[in-house]
Length: 279
Image (cartoon, rainbow, N blue to C red; front, side):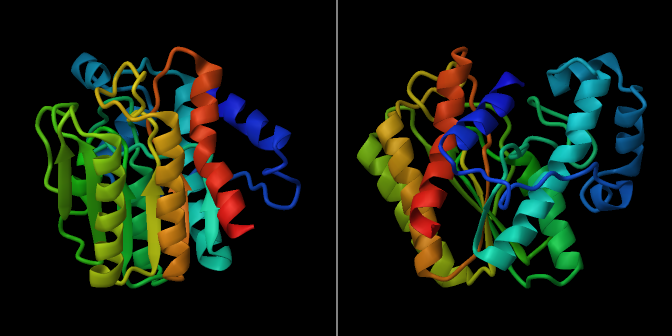
């Protein structure tokens, strides 16, 4: 949890975050969350009634702090997407909980902010087509499952094939990379995939999961991508969206380095890219 506050501090120190571009979401209402999640599951989580097996799969101990954060984060991504539609770019300093499924938590993910946001924007007819472009090192299985029957939301996951989850879901497009993938091949895959999807899908919004657990030193990553290449990835994604005049909302996704400050600086790469490309 420490990385979130550190990331905010970095953004303030770099003057990327100011009094005029900073927004604080409140807790999400149940009606919003129920667009992507089972009401029974939501009731069990919010009232601390999950079974031991459910808690083990969630990977986190229940607490009032976890509950508060979990209810705010999806609203943050929803707000970020709305701001992106208005301004062309917006970045959430959290989000990317893509392992959360319709009726259970998994892999440190309790509520799926990506699916909630996509469902809400489509229900409100803010957009006709959304692309969820997920570059976290782990497959976005929860997002893929929740949105499997929603043709207006295209899910793409570029991940390490031999990593969590063991049982992969079926995204609209899955690209499972080998552990041995080179940095050049990685960046080329990201660029060519996004270019093709922009042309073929014609999305009106891209939600980009900029997970930094692809980093070579991440204990849960398995890939060997350098910080320089992660920076290059962020510039590629945002530049392609800007060139195509497609609004883009970013979330930070995964990152698990025990050096929390180094991890927060890595998460800041997407904010730095957004600032340099769009400002």
